[in-house]
Length: 473
Ligand SMILES: Cc1cc2nc3c(=O)[nH]c(=O)nc-3n(C[C@H](O)[C@H](O)[C@H](O)COP(=O)(O)OP(=O)(O)OC[C@H]3O[C@@H](n4cnc5c(N)ncnc54)[C@H](O)[C@@H]3O)c2cc1C
Image 1 (cartoon, rainbow, N blue to C red):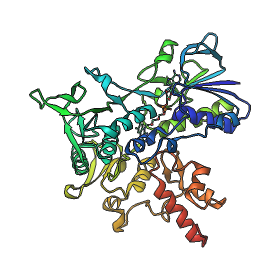
Image 2 (cartoon, protein in one colour):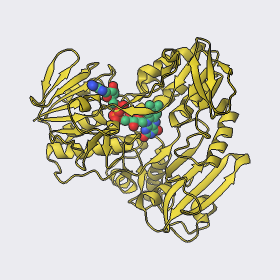
Image 3 (tube, protein in one colour):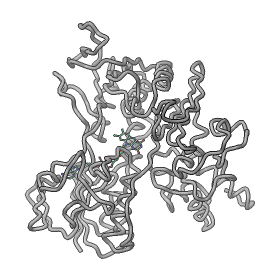
Image 4 (cartoon, rainbow, N blue to C red):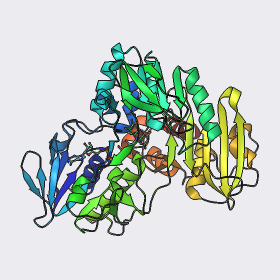
């Protein structure tokens, strides 16, 4: 069987890995438009912030392909799919036949049509990060356009490097898709105290060499900000051109069914380029889950494997800013039961959104000790305890919480690593087979190897198991 994978990003490289782990004989060719070995895109914010080097975000050892008999065409884009001949055509003119083709072409940064936009840098790839880092070394001022997750992480990273930075956001408050207005306001104040100047309700109308011109409802015109570095974080667009040109069904993404199959049964799509049940995801966990399903199907390891959609938890990775948000956070009191605690002076905000006695959304800002508990409740969709206070303040020991962040009380089914879908039970099983530290657990289960946000939780579970059994960690 000849498998061709187009796209060697987080979903494509994971798929190649998963297929080879299940089957030694499949002939695999992967095309990657980027010349780099696959890397952990999620950690690029750390590269901009200077807390990780480019080498530290690599996903695979360069020798892996040869050792696993995989042909990797790095720096070679696929330009067309010839469905009649079951062949892909590459930019260098070569043709590669396939029995199964998987599209994992991801997304590209949206670049708004602003005069002078060629002077700005997008924030999507390792090459983008290299450009930002280089410019930041001598920048006298920076502007980040877009106050979503990526824009905030970029702005915080630049401020941490000592660059005066202004974050511009067109909507009325930051991360308006994940946060309500009050949380957005508190986040703005937290970032302000860390050196990020924030302007909402405005955007850039022109980019010049040393300044940008602003536009927006609040401005009467003529305002500008000094900046010789402009970073664009204005959202992403799924890369669907190949699929569209090949006549596959495309909506916002490439339309797939529960087997991640397109309307051509020999072509699958996974990751950010795929649209499943009307949704296109923008986080890594769904792509990795989809890769596992496709690997099961194409190798025959589990012919019944199906993808049923993902429930997402967004976590900000910006130094000194704790933030987690999940589900429907913006419902009103008319639509849901809202439990909220806001302490603006301290920069903390906690909110539960409950419908029919179940958690459908939550925000934790400034303090995220309840994130494990809330994620479990959100994931399972089970009924909540009557006492909501214990859920918002697990540290107070008020009781009432059905599950807890404490390794002792956490059920084995609790999902500890969101990115890799690893439960406490799997970590326990791994410990029982001899893993005694986070690195060993990561090697066996992949927990902690996505965004890294679960590292403390995994450490806690390993420490607790060692203590319980009287084993030194
Ligand atoms: C700065 C940053 C921070 C992020 N933080 C988080 C986070 O905290 N948590 C989280 O879950 N997610 C986060 N994400 C999102 C996460 O990185 C993506 O969800 C994930 O990378 C999607 O994987 P993918 O393989 O679908 O796409 P990508 O990783 O984008 O990979 C697609 C690859 O396909 C290649 N390609 C495209 N077209 C072709 C072609 N024709 N031929 C050959 N190759 C092609 C592209 O060059 C690219 O390398 C972040 C993203 C960024 C940029």
